[in-house]
Length: 328
Image (cartoon, rainbow, N blue to C red; front, side, top):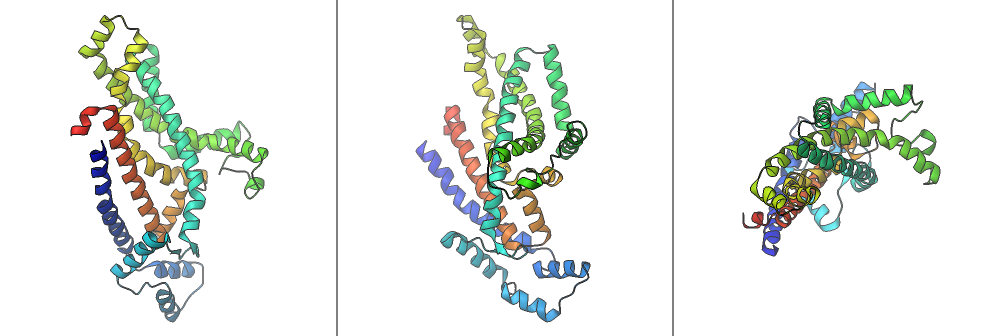
């Protein structure tokens, strides 16, 4: 296992270097740069800056330097000093912008992931062990609806229901009076009144898909000889099901940890925009639109790090759960 982990960890280093460079290049590919986008936005608002001012701003932010020089300055500051650069649009250090929103994003996404697994695993096991029962058909309908309804549409429906029937304005995570207030019991209660909608929206789609995966995997395992042997030895149904086929059927859940970690960071961007959530997703979207290269590049770099770490964790967990993978 040590050799297995070291091999995966060493492969992660060149992968991250390659991804960071490609991301930085892709952000620079559209015509113009941040100053171009900034000048266009000012013109749209009826304000103008001269070409001399544009040139001075490009020199100030180092945008006239070759692409390789800009990349090296950015990545070396990150590696050596932990400095992700300066956001041109927000006129603030990138680190402060990212970490301020990261805690909220992690809280929402982690809770939604936990709810997804709490719902999907037992429901998938029940559907497989009670195939073609009434509840199996009910869960099947839920799965199709959950996968078919877009998250942003479900968010709009829940917003409408909460506003019209529950008399709650649940846009965002806090009411206006609690936005800048220090933490208190009242602020926590206000947060709980708002956070249930993003949790339901994010958990519904994920749970609907994983229920079908869990059910299909369990049906494949329940018919195998080792399950029949366990029943023949007189073991109870719950012990047979949860000790053997469930463990094998959980492999797809474990393998998706590599996707879950970047999802925890980025969140569902469209849903976050609809619900006016102060998470990292909308900030990344705005940075890409404005070609704010240091902010957007830092987001993509952190997402890449989370993806690589998540994949490494998935590999380790899969090797632990299934020893056959260690020799693959």
